[in-house]
Length: 180
Image (cartoon, rainbow, N blue to C red; front, top):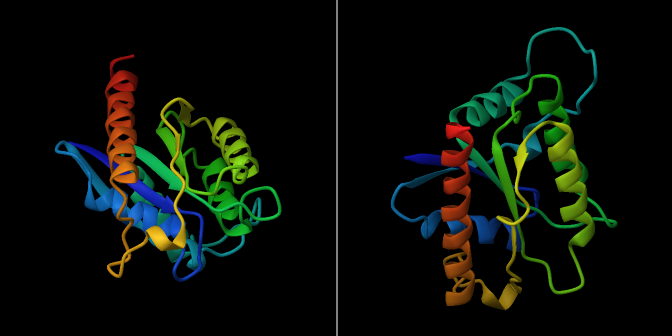
């Protein structure tokens, strides 16, 4: 079974990005297990070269990344780029190599005309940290607040079908990387 770690770049309650990833977890196809990373708000600021014991939130991030075969991100765009909290998470992976050669993709749920800056920055940073990024796996699947049901999940069949396809392709990339 391929294990995909889901990371939302939003710390906001009621986030469409978080709802999208929770829906991804609900529709995961057979053979794909998902794990939820929920510690974004607890991560301390990354300080290069800092010494001392590893913060428990950083240790938890590293353990979850280590247990995952792939990572799927879904993030809002703030001021034309990634939210600072998600960039901070990615900064924590630089020296440790937590994402090195790990297949990674993202969903963009922003309305058309939005989200491109965050996606471009995410692609750049993931490339820098050595993640295995195949941008053809990533998808734009817009979600509005009205698309989210009382259960906190995205109800649209189109979104759900797209999410399943992204998970299948990401799992396929895990297999391809393992055989390289």
